[in-house]
Structure formats: C-alpha cells, structure tokens
Image 1: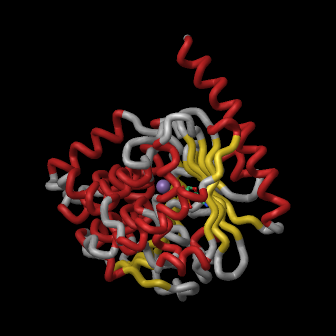
Image 2: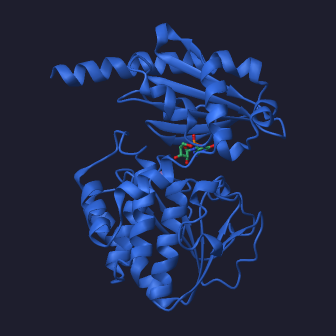
Length: 337
Ligand code: 5GP
Ligand code: MN
C-alpha cells in the first residue's frame, strides 16, 4: 500500500470509528503477541474515546501474556452474536475464517486491519499494509490519528506487538518506523528490559525440560541448514506441559549459525498437524505455507496439514530445502552488489 492509500485508509477508519459507538475487536485463532497487543491497544484507545468495546478471540493467549493489562476483558468464544456491535474490527486476519469465531462474517461493517500477504480485502473498510513489521505498528498509527494519547497500557501493548512479531528484532521486516514507534512507547513509560524478560524469560521448569527433549530429538537436514522438530501430546504430557508451552521454541534452532530454517510439526489432539516455520534473511517460508493454504510472513509462517503427515512431511521438507537454496542465492547476490 502506498503512502496516499495508507493515509486514505487511516482517515476513513478514523471517521468510521468516531461515528460509531459499539465495537467488537477480534484477531486470529491461537493469538500471538501481535494479536493480543493490537487488540488490547485498540480496546484501550476505544475506551479513551468513550466507546463500548468487546474483545473476542477463539483461543486463550499463552500464559506469559496473562498478566498484561486488559487480558481479563478478552472473551474466549467459538461463536458470537455480533449484531449489537456497530463495527467489527478484525486484526491480523487475511481471511475472516482465520478468527475461528463464527458469527462475524455476515456483519455489515467489518474493519479489516492486517499486514499479512494475501489479504482478501473482505471488510467494508480495508487497511492492508504488508510493510508493517507488526499489526501493532498500524494500530499505533490509527490511535495517533484518532488523537488518543499514548497511555502506558496502550504503549505496552504496542511494544508487545512489535517485540513479538519481529521475533524480538530478528526478522527482516524491521524498518526505521519500527524503532520510531518503539521510541515513542518507551517515552510513554515502557521498560524494554522488563518487557523482554516478561515475554521471553518466563518459562516454567517443565517448559525447560520440554525444550531439552525437543532439541535432543531435533533432526538436521540439508547439511545442517534445515532443523526439524516434532511434538505430540505424549511428549507434552511426559514433561508436564500443554500446547501453549511450545510457543517460542521454534526460534531456538535458528540460534545455530548454520541453520537457515526450522519446521515444527505439532500433532494436535484432534489429529490435525500444525506446521510452523521460521527462517533467516531471504529464506521465504511463506511460499511453502501458501502451497498448503496457510500464510504468514517471509521469516515466520504456518499452516495446517489436511493430508496424512507421513505423506506430506517429506514433501514439505523438500520444499523447505528448495526455499533455503533460493533464499541463500538472493541473499548472496544482494550482499555482493
Ligand atoms: P505461527 O508459526 O507462530 O503459528 O505463525 C507464524 C505466522 O504465520 C503468523 O504471522 C501467523 O499469523 C501466520 N500463520 C500461521 N498459521 C497460519 C495459517 O494457517 N494461515 C495463515 N493465513 N497464516 C498463518
Ligand atoms: Mn502480526
């Protein structure tokens, strides 16, 4: 989206927000830091404008987000009656089905705010900016445009969104704008050291044990450039963990210099397999996710496997090997010019 289109989208959303009274704010299923941060920053801003807000998600957030401000106002529901809301604000979803919440799709006034590639522009108003490192960057711009002061609660959630969606400032989507926004949140009282500790250093002993087990069993392919992690309910139970404890583990293999991409296969209780992927630099894991109906970003993407894992797994790993090959080629070309 170019700058004029962005200004236009923000202006239209501001006008729509100021004219309406009741809002429902939602985000994608299995919410991450960007979903939670974007939703709650928006909810606090709507409070400041005297609006009525409901925040609804399909799934609870991982435990380490639970003591952030406003977490208690998030309703967990797989279906809602949204007719009472004048507007539904959907964050972080390329398609409304990503919310996992039934009852929203037919709403006459959806505001779609997203930074993922391939957004289907399903809203009455659509603001899609792939250049944003986090949806929280977009929410920051919107809140400023609405004239709402950056309270500590809002700043905390914006920083949370940016900190987590940049992979703690590791991903290739970071721009000067990212740091400008962070600077303003720190000026508003956010403590970056405390935020990093709260988000990344809040593991339980059980999770540390799980990390040990997973890394011990990690498979290395493609001459050590591709790492593969596998998990199922039995492994989780043996360590005293739940699926929520797997958050963030996928990033650990990338701390090895040679490893360029990681695939994490999680067999869920209903037998579906969630595939999460992470990569470095120009290695594009979204291109692999897209082939399976998933999505995400160049360095962080995912999808759900709908065919037997033993059939899909070798193919996915082959496609990742190819993505590594292509990514390293463009990276070397870019560095030599
Ligand atoms: P994660 O691996 O943490 O679940 O997701 C990484 C990134 O990929 C996030 O931006 C997430 O929104 C996106 N993503 C993960 N799974 C899916 C999926 O099934 N569909 C789409 N469209 N995006 C996904
Ligand atoms: Mn995001």
